[in-house]
Length: 106
Image (cartoon, rainbow, N blue to C red; front, top):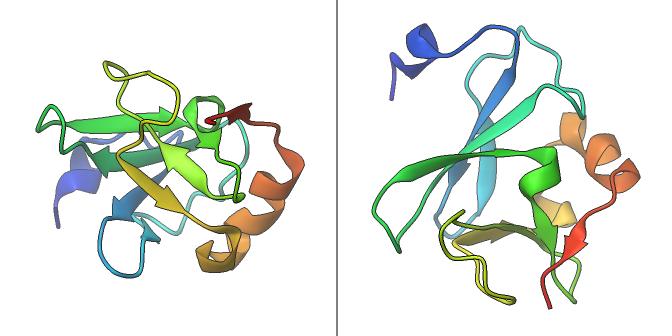
């Protein structure tokens, strides 16, 4: 993914969801300051084998307070492809996530 940012619009703050033990979000380009409107998160989907892009409005919250990244084709309640907790949230995204309202995923 080292050249991925060459193909992405510079009007957005692009992040990649690292589906590992850490469940971290990694910035692709730190020059664009993230906002609720320009935040885009790329995440892998084990269900369909593709990568998806989530806007803030696409992310759901579960009953433990974790933020779920869901496949647009698998939208049943409780399903998700990855999650991140507020404890693991990059500092520059914490305020955005705390102030946003999310659809429940439980």
